[in-house]
Figure 1: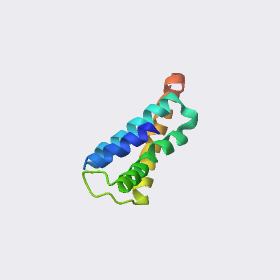
Figure 2 (figure 1 turned 60 degrees about the horizontal axis):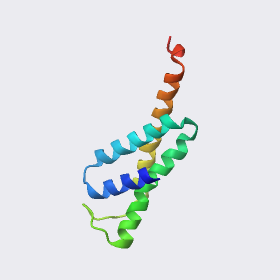
Figure 3 (figure 1 turned 135 degrees about the horizontal axis):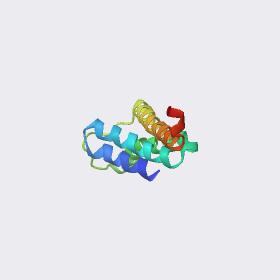
Figure 4 (figure 1 turned 45 degrees about the horizontal axis):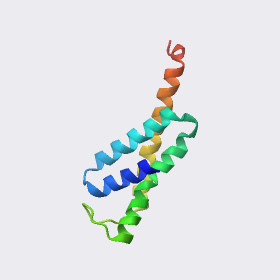
Length: 103
């Protein structure tokens, strides 16, 4: 959850979308490596940070790089990238555990 809030804050401070996407992928990958059984939960907790930070920015009139507007499509895209990163971590962990399956 803290990683998701940090990514949400980062998204509000910069204008480049690729930085947010990479952060979602990397955090998902890390958490998927650490705990592969709960990959979808990690992705959901990471992705929920973006709309939460948008809500906080709107409520407290925080200064951001661009005007803040809540859009559910952005939250869904963030969830997809977090899910992709998380399951990449699961896949890598699976490969690391059973290298015999590659032959």
